[in-house]
Image (cartoon, rainbow, N blue to C red; front, side, top):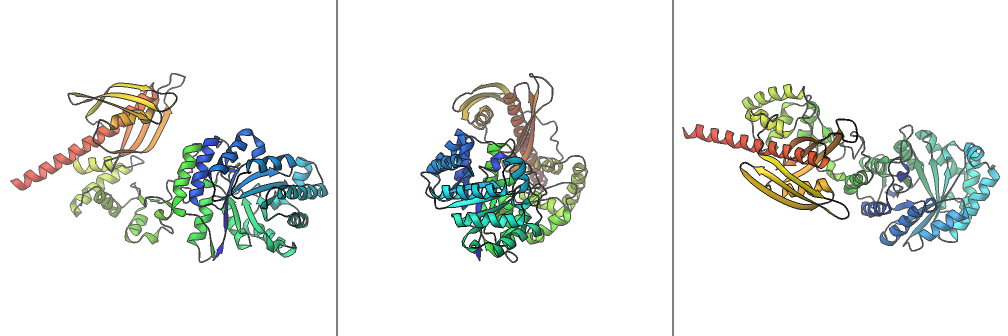
Length: 517
């Protein structure tokens, strides 16, 4: 099986996505995770663009030693010298030089002719080879370049010493057969091309980035340039996780392998989301929230019988903790019974029919049916107005440099209890202080803040979903102080969990009394 190199440009091209800028420390943290993921080449940045970017490349070079570390440079001596300086201590370094080759870019952006373009490309490769043996050349806007001129440029830079030739679809213009043909043509016409690695760099303006990347592999490319979650300029780049898993899932059609540790894909995606604040759309392939979620009753029934019926890859293979059967208005009895079974209830046919009827009514009224709803249905309880088992009596938070510190005072029944803890931010500290008091295990699944009134003194509403003792509960709280609102939402979910336990104990007592009689 042939090897395809994965060139990750999340920290360079991906960071150019609006709103995705990272600090040097964040880039270093992301670089360590990309190393754990197993990328072959890590493009750490564009050193000449800023002192911060140069510093980030230098810090990555010092700490990340396994992958090849690449730095981008225009076909300009100053760019190349800056990149070489940033890569100076790399275990394995690559200078990635580029110049546009389409007539559109040459005339309107660079304002040079074709002869000058070739001269600059050759000079850049020769300059970079003075510092490193591993030089990559990119023909920007290759997919819109004149095919004959592209042959001239690539022939010249290979003779000058380029070891990797990248043919970017810079504006996502190409379609798969067209993009593949460009690789076939160069392989047929360029002398010495068999001695270099051909690379594909695709953008997603028409939603074809991954398809074009796969087409390029079939046409001879052995390096794919891509980003985590597909982030990047405009509509983004080819998504690393999609390219890798397409090769893995369809090995019958694509006999190629990569070095990627696929079980790190979801973790890497989540880290990037945490750093940038940009969430993949829910239906994003491989790492989206719904990628392994099923609501339709027919699908759920098939999955419960054999996962292969509706899943072509396992969630565990990409680091996701299993399939998620979403309970909604399209769900069937088997999925509902399975969920109750996971909550510890084995329902007989009569109970299942009763709760299924109530469940269908509820599912037509609300978007998400949580464990709290299922427990209320089963025990004829209600989660809309639960008793206040815990009430907030006092909250004090100190934050600034370093860890935040929170102190909380709760009223539990007639007893006042106090707790304090540190946390990474005021809300995390407040939650930790509550956790120091209670005897429940709480894990936050979803956390949302939005203003419900206008102005600088707006009331903020916090909604959250949490796993409490392995069951899902929602919480809601509002306040002019967002930390106070978050605490109230946390306690709201906690009170539902305590109420659910009370309902279960009441039902068990009634069952025991029935048998005692």
